[in-house]
Image 1 (cartoon, one colour):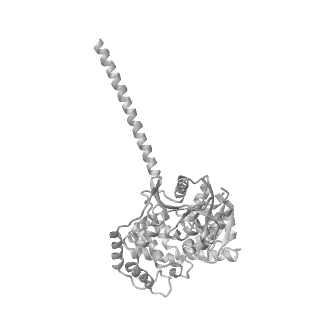
Image 2 (image 1 turned 90 degrees about the vertical axis):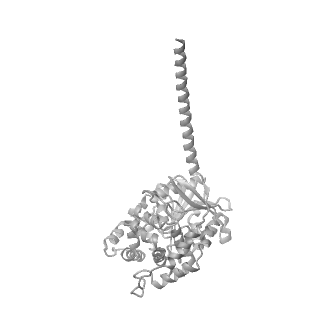
Image 3 (image 1 turned 180 degrees about the horizontal axis):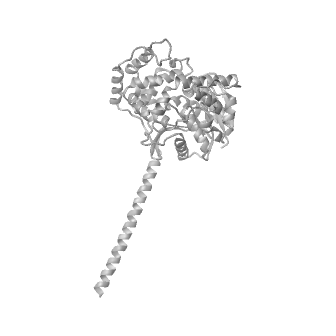
Length: 434
């Protein structure tokens, strides 16, 4: 009997010990999981170093290009002219130095953090001035963080560029998912809404309780999405490619109808610009919206294919009269093109068009009337279309700033950094209360 009781106590002790060990192991496992989450959410320093083999391979591919025949017209109606792309590519394969581009990025404080399972790389510059307003700026396609580097000084250190200390911004410049050194999504779902959510997470992870958001091209779409979401702390947005086209005008453009009656001169000009894009200039988007994977094979395998695809847009969308080199240098364009090539993001960046097939500048698809927070707009003369004030006021119900400037195009911060910075100071002046 005593032996039986002893065995029973041993058995119960074993169970208790086992249960304790199981609880401890479970607790340990949970702690590891929590720690893993904390580690992934950490803000980690980032340094760019592209290996020489990749650069050598790029130059070898460039110099081995098989060229098509020359265009059969005297203008750019068939696309980039052979002589122009050959001049750019010759420089790319000989004198262009990626290491200088890399040094520009590494000269700035860069970081990476994981948001929703994706590593997001970003630049974060804090102003030396007190009470600087936190500003997150989103680039577009075929742009990158390179298009924003020239505004870093004017925005973060305004006293050195004709501004006042109270004009200062803390600046956050992320690479969108699938662009630059941010991680490429492995599945679907990373559209403007999710990116907008991620940017709010990023700003709060950096410790900012209040901030503003700015964008052109895709950056405008993402800023609009953030404004619709209106997360706590987002004070206002500024866009330089606003979605203002009224429903009746959008329908006429879509159906190929004549200009609607009753439009003002500026509204007719906007209609004409958009009609030109949809009928003669939108092939690039049509391919990315419908078949980004198919397009990706050519852009990923041929650096000259990638360069010509981008140069076509640089020519059309800069305020240059069709010659991008009047607005951007060869090095500036090749910094951007090389970034896409060396990070192998031609395909992943195109996927954003497939994810979001509603960016046609119109009020209904962009749901701008849902935006309640303050909105500022600057219209640049070389933009794809010049949004009339009449449309803009109807599209954005809480429009706090509207200005038409006399120079600069679609890549406004790249082309006219000083003017762009002045617009940011003026646009967000009224929300600097925190």
